[in-house]
Image (cartoon, rainbow, N blue to C red; front, side, top):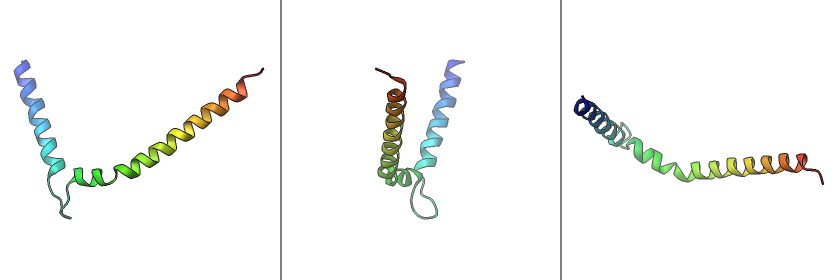
Length: 66
């Protein structure tokens, strides 16, 4: 039973890799499109992290009284 599970998982992984690396109509694969957008996602993620840190700091400052 375990062997059958490994065969199915292996086939699914192989199909997934084939799908994301296959060239599309524009001559580019999904993985190439994702790789090109990484710097943009990094900048957007950095903005979200900074906003969250500022929100947490403001909340903590408003709750602490000396």
